[in-house]
Image (cartoon, rainbow, N blue to C red; front, side, top):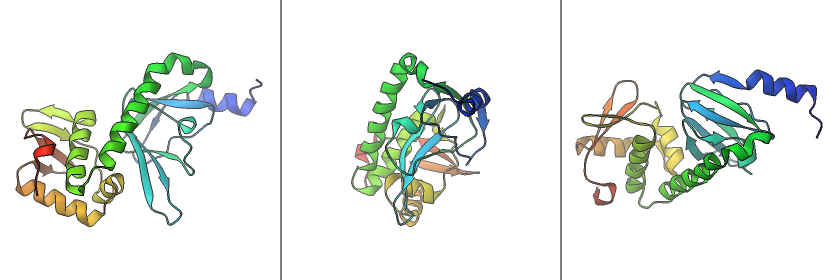
Length: 196
């Protein structure tokens, strides 16, 4: 296989890179990104402009164009991200990470398809806490800075419903919203006992 100078330049420049919150990871069909720090979401859109979150990825996860058939397809940084570009020749060295990618995708799909939406919302917050939260004496601190609109898109609901559910969970003492869009998910009973 011949490598064009442009491809070589691309891979040399981006071997290890830092990205700001809300920026997009560059996509190359012959490489993947290994996330070192931060959180990324893979997204696509319906023709009407409705965005669809395909997955949420963190440190150690592998993401990239060749793992999806969605079109359009973007990788948006939800936080500041540091990532390493992995060329196609190195894919066999990342077989465990690729299997984990598939498993995490299934976890996310299970949450998104949970009914009713209040249970899906609480499962989603619990999953975010386990995957990306920081444990403290009161529970899991989630510091992703997601908007209610983004959370609604991720679980297949609306911003209005997410706002209502946040208020209800706060009143019940299950969560506490802190400054700068931080959420403290208190250690409480498991999600399947949750009732509104």
